[in-house]
Structure formats: structure tokens, C-alpha cells
Length: 251
Image (tube, rainbow, N blue to C red; front, side, top):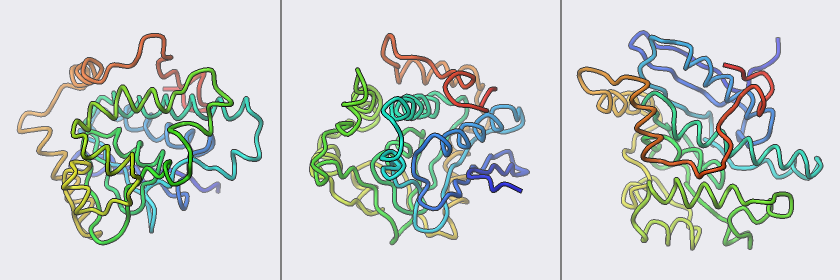
């Protein structure tokens, strides 16, 4: 039986726990296809009230799969970047409250993935959030610019991330100087909402999601529309179309 890179467990109290189970969970087309199939499962479950994502071991998501990118042609890299962009916006506009339970390192694209959730709970004492492009001598999305006519990474940063992080101190420390931000620092910089030990990470994420839902819950369609109004995708940017962007992820 083929190992699933991303699995979904539905709890009796109405939560979807999406587990990324591919080691460092680096972003490539195969991994993103599995991730989007998991999101499809969650959307199909009308009893689900909120979604939590997490990884296993040392990593939440370690960013782009750079080694894989070296082995494919520019057209495939172009497809990858569009798939990443579409996936991040899908999380941004997901019709349920979303919580990233950050169990370990979240670097680069993995940090953007965490930030695309409504809330973030980070494991104490282990793991960093980091945008390390400055130390890699690479501008945001620079390694992909030679393959693309538009810089989708920078576009997402300007239109989504910067709306979630309004404090310039946060952008200075975490992005400009590329510091490896621990859980307590991330809380101080408003990158995460809560911290918890590993054994309490999912329960804390569920608590955060429940507080977002409130006593009466939230209508899915209205929540998605509000997210689309607040986090506006740029004009001309392609909407998420699973059947054309990622094989096997048709809703």
C-alpha cells in the first residue's frame, strides 16, 4: 500500500487533523498534490468545524524542495510555483477556521504555509520560524524569477503576509534579518498566537479553533467570503482550480 504523504483524521468533536508525514515536508508537486487532496477531504466533510495542520518529528515544513527543483526543467518549476501560490491562497481563503500546530521548524515556504492559517500554535523549546533568504543571498522568490514572468512569492508576501503582520519590527527581525525565531520570540512578534509543549500542541490548537468558532459556530460560506474580502487576491491572479493545477485533487 502506497504511503500517504498527508493524512486526515476527523475527531468526534468536529475537528480535522491534517498531518504532513513526509519527513521535512518540503514543497514539491507530489507533496502539494497530497496536501490538496487532504484539503478536499476536509471540505467534503460537512460535519467538520475547523482544521488543524501539523507535521511530525523535527519539521512542520522546511520550505521548497530545492534538490528536487535541480532535477526538473523550468516548465516544471513554473508549475511548482503556481501550485505553491494557489495552495497558500487556498489556505488563506479556506471556509473553516484553520490552525497551524507548528511542531518543529518552519522555514521559507514552510513559514509562509504556517502564516496562511488563521491561527498558529507553536511548540515550545523546539523549532524555529525563519525566512532565511537574506542569509542565502536570495531575494524573496529570486531563485524562481528566472523561470517566471511574475514573482508570485513576492506577490503573496505583499498582499497576504503583510496584512497579517502589521508590525514592522516583526518584518525587520523575521524577514529582513532572517532570524531563527523561537516560540517565545514568535509570540512576542505576533507571528504565533499561542505556545504549547508537544504533548499539548493539538489540544491547544483545538482550544484556539473552538474560541474562534464561538458558542454558535460560523457559516462556512460567509467565513470564506469574509476571508476573500479581507485577504484580497490580486486581480488577474488565477483562482485555485484543483482539476487543472494539481493532478488528482478535484473537489
